[in-house]
Amino acid sequence: MIVVKDLVKTFDGFRALDGISLTVPTGSVYGLVGPNGAGKSTLIRNILGIYKEDGGSITIDNIPAWENEDVKARLASIPDDWFFFLNSTIKEMKDFYKGVYPNFSEERYEKLKEAFPIDEKKQIRHLSKGMQKQVAFWLALSTMPDYLILDEPVDGLDPVMRRQVWSLMMNDVAERGTTVLVSSHNLRELEDVCDHVGIMNKGKLLLERDLSSLQDNIIKLQVAFEEGVTELPEALNKELSILHLSKHGRVFTIIVHHSAKEAEEILKPYNPILVDAIPLTMEEIFVYELGGENYEVKEIIL
Image (cartoon, helix red, strand yellow):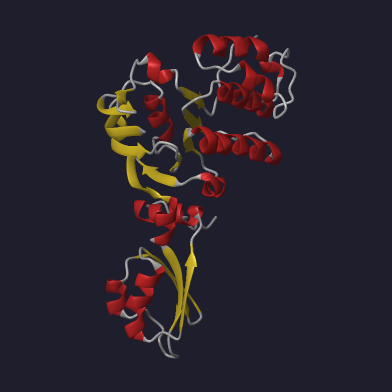
């Protein structure tokens, strides 16, 4: 389990992380989402020990993460901009990883050649960005990590290879209990693999829930009343926790912070002639949750 508590990280007086706390349960796939500049990459670099926190704490399985070789030996990471020695071949990088990670598996490295059919004698700098990212997964998964920390992990991969790497990672989660923390802007993809979600903005955590609970507690309602009702009843406005409201013809579309059952019970006394509850995608939840943080899409006339 990764536990981040009251974490602060400052750069030249700017608080990139402003007292953030979150928990990544063991064996889970935790999706970390937020707008550009929210602090996601900074948080990941603190967890990996690249940055030292200015305040707060990070523990992995109740052990402080900073400058702890035993903890780091169990972590593998793939950053957005993966580092490798400029003139190294894949095989040479493999030997480097083998010297750093005590659990590195030659057997697994050889098996993964089937998934990543790239000549291991090639210099990595001569490979495309997508092929370099494949090499990063090849090596990271060969370390047999207990924790896999990913920052925009599948950026640059073609659709078939994206499926391949997610399949490999989810297999590790199921069979080895690997814990995955992944930051990504591809919310549609995260929706398929994550069981926990944290939404960040301005160095803080806006909310943290398991995905099913999150989707159960924010829904889209399409509601219509008898002819002549052109505005949502004022009392209903106060009873519903409304994130967004729009109207097309007689149908109101309302995004609310309620379960479908709760919302229908609140609406019942107002005798609607239509109530349709529609689950939101993770991308819609992200946009509407951040709407209160001035993150809504702005209409600009050019």
